[in-house]
Image 1 (cartoon, rainbow, N blue to C red):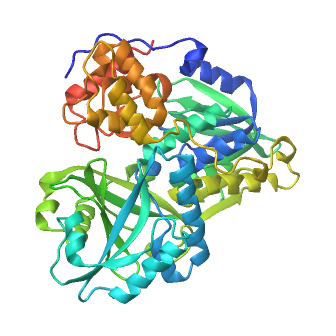
Image 2 (cartoon, rainbow, N blue to C red):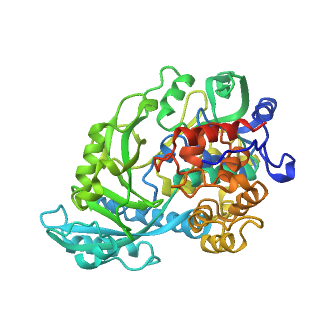
Image 3 (cartoon, helix red, strand yellow):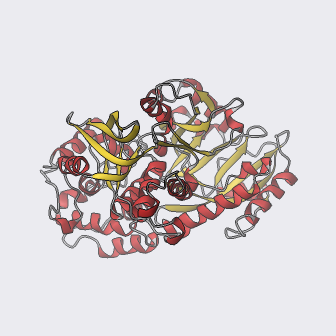
Length: 536
């Protein structure tokens, strides 16, 4: 690992785009009255803050941990139409999901989303036949207006050329369809950045310790900055509770007698090193309703997911030995044993799906967005899925406009008057960005490595040029954080100065892929902490 010299916060004047200090942000939050205070920095809260700021509202967003620090960075990394929803006849839902998927991957964030071919293996004795799955993937592609090709069926031999670790014993046929994938943490951070560009004021690592009331109505929140213990408050005309698995906890702050509104389902995943290249993903039916995924992602293999009711503390969710065994056992239906060795596991993670309250198997529950209004006027939003994050933001905003008394409607632009496909920061063709990074390179030093150029292009888009300039101006920042990962130290400095990174985990788990790759060593963590400490 390189020995880093002290690199203080870069670009401290406003034109540089550097972030204000936490003290400055707290002061700004404390002194103003906001139209909307969003509590919860998962993708639902972030998307709502983005849309609210676009509509002209004065918006504040806070989170007890990091942005996308819980379930929003623990997803299956997919932007998808929801193939399994066709079984329940939810044709309109699939079409809507496809519209959102294609909007994000083609026009809103093509620099952050990648097309991915899926193979659905049909085994002898499996839950579905080849004819049924062939018809299903054709209908699925039709609902996307065949924008990603036509769903069809191919031979096992052809599929194995793209997925060499595919089991072919008793394999009758393989159905083919297409969706998209992403790095969820990076997509969330770019959406935070878009919200700030639109005027929102944001602060992570700021926990709500209580709500403020005026004549029985919720009009703000008391907060505590977990980085230094500073207590402060925020006033707002309306408060939105977007705390995901903690939504009922905050509802009880508003009304101690509030009945539970949600239930939770745990989804666990494993990340493994790949033994051979994969050019397609596997989606293997386990039973009539469930599918297990094997996704080539970030040069690794992502396996999952589980779906079981969770009743514990959301903060304690983790991957258990039973989860690991289940994921590997289910993956073994379609993947050869050598790719499923436990020695290849680099990381595991679990998130909590927020589902509407009620009985029944969580795997069959609808992934609906639930919006409720409490007795103190606080709105709570929960549920939904990553693919439709923009749609959820618009839905919440329409709900705000229709509230009794119209407390915000006069001050906000209607959703139908705003651009439907406003791009996220950094939008660019990632292939063109990677090419430029390779051609230009740092003037005095060696050219950027191809894997680093590709990584920067697909995680930052055109903002990758800002990181390249940092590496050019500070040669020590051009070195790799770990020899086995594409990330460079300039990304750590950039995360500190432009992406609200406060802790080593913020950097290693969500701004970069080092933790997921199993490379967050003690030396790496020490170097990251040193660079973060040079903030001042």
